[in-house]
Amino acid sequence: EKPTSSACFLPQGLVACGDNITIYSSSMEEQGSIQGTYQSVDAHATGQYAVAMKTSGAWSLIALEAKSVLAESSVDPGDAATSPIRIHPDGMIVAAAISTNGAHRVKVWEVKDQKPVHAFDGHAAPITSVSFSENGYHLASVDESGTVKLWDLRKLKELKSFQVDGAGASVSFDSSGKYLVVATASSVVVREVKPWSDLVSVEASAIGACFLTDAQGVVAVDGGGGLVSIGK
Image 1 (spheres, rainbow, N blue to C red):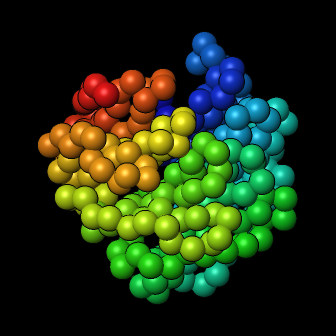
Image 2 (cartoon, one colour):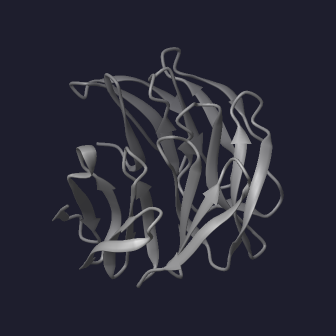
């Protein structure tokens, strides 16, 4: 067993990070590892490469088949990553939350040259989670105060902001981009995008939540490691 801070599925396996980045087969046999301590990892849908974020706010582009680091982004003094890193569905950009001397923003970088292309400002507390919509048009974020923001990636502006109860832990779109689930220290909230109406709100201390296939339900993880299942 290895200490793990983050993991995600590959088409034929799993990649996890912690004290190292470790690649597993679909039968959970270790296929190799890459040295380096990272706080989060996300893989492209093709399974050919992944991105891994350090607590400093620097991130690495990983070639999974070669099991090597292709490049690493630069980092500004005072930066600290506060959310897991996420890859855009087209694989061209990545996003993560960065706090710098009390300023909390969602930063977006180009994958090909690891350079920042935009930063979304507006959160007053550290941002804990970000999520791209499946169509790639929107980016959602949630912070420790329970503020959720939706950003327009085409117009590079804030589209919507709303409040949920409890400190925000995670935010995630469903595969259609029609629904958004937010997990907090006191609730799991499912909202419909556009009407912005609450569809389901369940009292639960959750550290993460995601949709099942076709948004037929939600699975949340509570602080004790238990699972909470919510029907549509």
